[in-house]
Image (tube, rainbow, N blue to C red; front, top):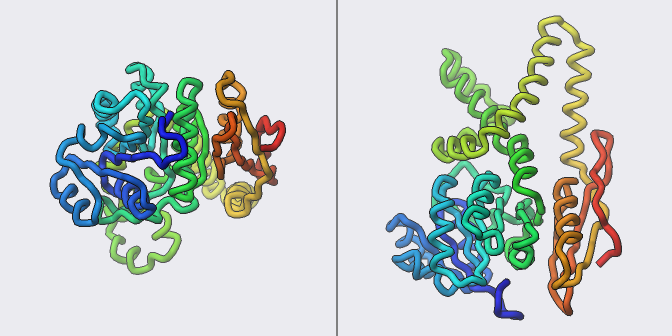
Length: 352
């Protein structure tokens, strides 16, 4: 979709807090032609002090860009998306970094922007906030979700190559619905659990005694409770249906643990924790097999889209996306089956 073949895209980053600031600083460090913009004047001043071009007006920041990252709060994304697309050329690819995808994808479809907008979500962050907390290496080795569509395949390819080459991240292609269900369990419910534990301790007379004993398990289990409260609430509310649906799975398992504990049933406790331990070991010991494919440009995108979505839903990812000589070549990887559960089918076909 970028109409300057063989040349690096010109990029704008709109919203330069922790995530947007880290995107901006990595692009700047890489030598990319990048412009930042933030509604907060002090943040714009800070960005200029770091050597990055920060125009005063949003329109000036995005007007001549090939790629725009939208990195503001979830609640602002629909209006920002419409504003940015009004001030950019038709060939400009727009993506976001929000932690939920269904709502913003729906807005893009309603506005007729699916050919230009590719929903995205880098699975990285810290409990800190603001441009001063941003670090260029935040995304190294991280999973970065992009949601491809038949209408927006050219934009997906542009972003996949950019994110892999500049940010050293792994592209996980997923539909918006699958992302929101999986993210509820992988990210959003952990925020609920961390907040529940930290909040319960904060309200007990044992607070100081607990803090005196707190070691790695408590620190790790409550780390994301340090995220700014408004940001967490925004994330949970924007994925409310999936969070509540998947929370039912978690509370059911917790109820089973509590029932076994009340009954003094050691065998049941051991069985439940063996199941949980198996999942943890699968997370730490994943191995992959190749799942590379090539597709002709200009052909129907159905097979390419099926490959990408199957790869992501099976827990796989991309480590390269190359467009040359009339085709796109993907270097894909899918997890090997393990004792905790089999990896899903991916239409691998001929290797790239």
